[in-house]
Structures are given as C-alpha cells and as structure tokens.
Amino acid sequence: MEQRSYTTGTKRFLAGCSILLISISLYPLSPAPQIRPSIHARQVLEAYRRAYPDRIESVAWQNNDWVIQIQGELFYWAQGRLLPESHRERWQEYKPYVFYLYPDDAPAPQNYTAERIAELERIGSAEHQMNGPDHHNGFRSALYGGAKRGDVERNLVKVRFLGKTISVHAMIQEQVLRIDERIRGFAKTDSDVAQFLTNLGSIGGYNWREIRGTSRISMHSFGLAIDIQPKRLGSKAIYWQWEAERNPQWMLVSQSNRWAPPEAVIKAFEAEGFVWGGKWDLYDQMHFEYRPELHEISKLYMIFSTLQKYGIGGE
Image 1 (tube, rainbow, N blue to C red):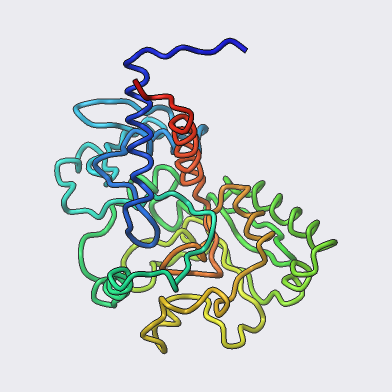
Image 2 (cartoon, helix red, strand yellow; image 1 turned 180 degrees about the horizontal axis):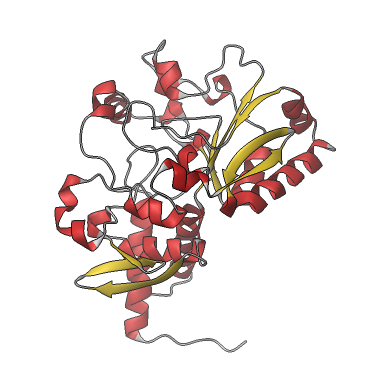
C-alpha cells in the first residue's frame, strides 16, 4: 500500500490533537475525567455531530468561538457551557457540561488517593449539590426535542424491555430493542445473564424529575436513561447517595460489595451508545444513559493516540 506523506503543518496538527486528547485522561473531575472546557471545544462538538447526524447540522468557528447548529438553532461553546448567542457573554452564570473519556473498567476505590477521597467527600456533600450555578438547559432541550414536560412526552414511545414495558425517547427505541435481543441471546449460554434475568426486579425509563439534591433535569426526564434493579440487593451498595446516608466512606465501597449487572449486559448497552453509571466515581450501579457522544470522544482519543504511537506528528 502506498505510504501517505504528511506536511510539517499536518504533523504539528496531529501531534497537537494527540497531546490535547491525552491530557483528558489526566484531569480528574467528577463523576469521571472531564475535558477542560476551554481546550477541547472542536473535538467535543464534532463528537456530538458524529453521534447525532440527523439532528446536528454543522460545527463551525463563528464570532470567535466554536458553534454547533441544531436544526437551525446555534449554540456557542462559551467555555463549555453550550449557550445560545443571547446568553454567551453570561457564561459565568452557568455550570459547564461534563465530558469525559468513557473508561473501559469501573474505578478501583482501593487506589484512590487521600486527595481524591477528600474531593469526593466535598462534591458528594448536600451543600455542594445544592450550591453553585446550574447548566443552561437550552442545548439539551434542542438536541433531544423538548424543554417542557409536555414537549418531551410527545417524543416518547412504549417498548417491551426484558419483560417489562417502559417509556423511552423515540430516538433510542431501536437501540433498546437491540439491547433486549442481545441480552436474551446471551442468557441462552451465559448462566450469569440467565440469573440476572431471573432476579430482575424493576426497570425504569422515562420519569420527569430533577436529579436528587439539585435543580438539574435528569436524563430520565428526556426518556434517555434506564434504571435496572434486582429483586434483592442483599447488603450490596447500588447508588452512592443511598449508601452515603448510612456510610460516610461510601466512595470506598469495593466493587465486590457493589451490585452490578453481568459484564455481557453492560457491553450490550455500551454497544448501542449507552454509558453505565457503575463506571463513575459517584456510582449509580443501576443506571444506563444514552451518551453516544462520549463514545465518539473516546474514539477520537484512540485514533490520535494510535497516530502518535506510530510517530505521526513528529518532525
């Protein structure tokens, strides 16, 4: 195969992308590593464009900032706040969105440093949850098609999932049905998956509500998250806030003492663009939410890391 040559400018660009993307994994925030809002604007917005090609029309540099267009509506990066033009100069009033490299594995609490434990205690406090600025919901409302409950509910469909009927956003109907088919197929040969289905308690999809302890709208409110709970937990932890009510060292609960779906079930969700809350430091073992843009960010990281590995980007 003919070897492609790269100009010096191209090499520098690729090297710069590699360095920026590698730095994502070195920046610890909650609930998972987060991209610094002022650095990776274009990569994040391009990840959204790749994840939602039917809804996002373009990503461009405009008026000294990166802009993403959703069905005719423009949102500026605005230091990671994703704001309409009327609000972009007031970016400090809003909390930045969280973007991160979705990890392959759940965190290992035994490896947390004293500094990380103290940080989790701080961000897990009721005071921290309630104080400070909030996100501007315009971007997600435009992307998912609804700002008010009535608007959102017009997007919902009912599906049968693992023997239960749940309501989800129409944009993930086919994904949920494929996950159902895949899990049922695994259960025929995988005893852990078969046992998981036998012990299945409840499944929740759409639920209009704010995230507990905040005024932020949950992904459940858009019909883009699914919670799965077993009939019995025994003594295992399943959600960090529930555990925190009885255990001040909730963040140090080992993975073996947390309930988790079988690996095959988690992979079935991930293959369809979902992320699992068990991979967050603020763990939510029952929770899956549709975040294909996070998988796209991880793909970009792998691409540029591979280019760097083979020396593309060096002089």
